[in-house]
Image 1 (cartoon, one colour):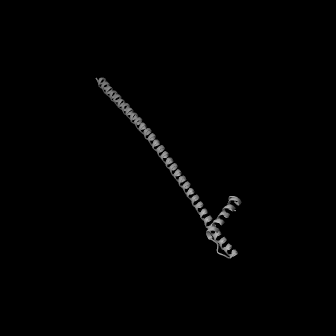
Image 2 (tube, rainbow, N blue to C red):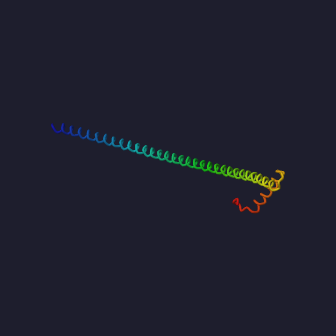
Image 3 (tube, rainbow, N blue to C red):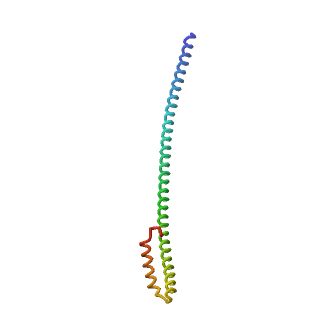
Length: 143
């Protein structure tokens, strides 16, 4: 009499253990699936982050190149303006010097001759002389 009840209890216990093992296998499969999904999302996030970083680096590099090109253009423009200013100042100094030399020469000639000379005629003669001297005796450095 006692053995059939024990057998039923053992069968019930075996069935419960099988059910628990099946539930554990199912839970493990769900956990593995969830882990795989998480790892895939993490890989996607890393890929997206790397793409964002690469894009930011590219934009920063482009900005640096643009700023450098703009600075170089500004420097070139400033050099051009400075060269033009220097040339203008040089020409003005030469013109001022010619005027001063002409006035001194006319004054000296008036003293030597003892009479007033026509300033325009003499200035023209002096300018011609200065041009001749500058053209034949100049070595390009002003001496």
